[in-house]
Image: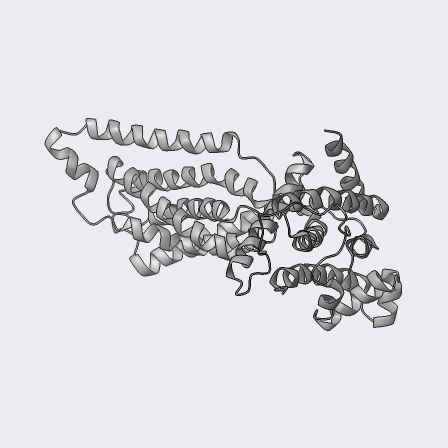
Length: 211
Length: 180
């Protein structure tokens, strides 16, 4: 078939087309992903026993996860459709990471020098690096499936943004379990957990998002 | 750029339901895409034309992904670049090397502008029956959606959805096709 003929075929009876509304779908996707992660925590890990007394740190950690997700969401939304620039949205991520580094530094300076290492590393295996990506998986899977329909063209980058966003959502759920409240520990390992989730998202996205 | 405002106007008119404007958009886009792909696939004008056709189907079936806040050409070339990268990845996995001499020689100016390697008409036959029938009636036999609905017994919206899905499937088939 010649190209001119193909153009005739495509244009004939094409009719109007509306811009898809994705806001509602996105909101439902995120709520479902968060609920599934919360159920996974409640069943698989168990909510921390002192959650009543530790309401404040749990809330703070959940807020931290929400903030990370909020910084990544505009990037994922831009990358969802072809030819949209990232601009200031990259700067927002840089500011977020800089604030994290500052928070870790200030928190560690507040500790006695001989206790700093323990406050940072927690003296235990930081399971959150593994568990946050696992809890992010439901949200990631739903978002990959949703955004694939919108003709993304930078697949690995969008996959990474989806992974990082979902990592933030996973961290919100993980906060219900996480027994450590040291600021330096939480910020360091949560950010690493989110980064692992982003890396997995990039690898999976490059394959799954093809259209 | 003159192209930008002009093309954007045509696409937006097309999105609003003006088929003639949409045809004009696709025709002008085809010219720009041809230059884009020939520049990057020197000495392989048939592959370039395959990509022009593949990208036109992509632009058409995904035209609702254009966000009027941003430049139209950025949207169009983002999709073109994506199809090109996908093509090169496929070419790398190919056993035979039909795109030998990829970097050698110039595009032949005498070359028939619209000769593609693959035959889209043959690919249409591979579509699921309902999609193939809807496309055949409306797109090739030039019947209206209403007439096609009467002939097949489907509803009009069923016909429209079948056509849209069929064209999306067609683009996937075009991408999978391994021209020899």
